[in-house]
Length: 212
Image (cartoon, rainbow, N blue to C red):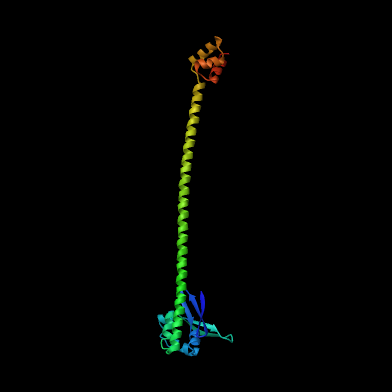
C-alpha cells in the first residue's frame, strides 16, 4: 500500500512495509529544501542502536542518470527525530503535513486490519454454520438409518412369523392325516375338508396324495 502526497510542491511517497509507514530521507531533503548529502550525514551521526536500526533502515534510489544511490527509509519516529532541529514557520508547516500524512497512512492500515478481522470473523461464522448444518445432517441421517433399521426388523419378524405359520399349516399329525383321508373317502371335496379341518389347501392335498 503506497500513497503519494504533495508537500511543498514535492511528491512524497509513503510506503507501507510490514504494517509500518515509511518515507525517505530524499523526500525530507526535497521538502525541507536541504542537500540530501547533509541529511544522510545527519542520520549517520545518530548512535547505532536498536532505535536507529528500526527507524532508519538503509535503502537506495535511482537518480535521473540511472545511478543507484543510498538513502534511508524513515518511520514516523525516525522522521520526528530527524526534523526536530528544523526551525521556522515553513519548516513547522511541513512537519505538520508530514505528521498528518503518517496519520493518514496509519489510519488506512488500521482500517485494512479491521476489514481483515471482519472478514475473518465472517469466515469463522460461516464455518461454524456449516459445522452446525453438518452435525444436523449427520443427526438426521443417523435417525433415518435407525428408523429404516426398525422397519427392516419389523419386516423380518413378519416374514418369519408367516414362514412359521406356513410351516405349521402344512405340517400334520398322523391323526390329522387319517381324519382328512377318512373325510375324503366319505365323499367330501378338498375345499370342504379345508373348511372343516381349518387346515391349508396344501396340507389337505398332501394328506390325500399320501393315501392314493
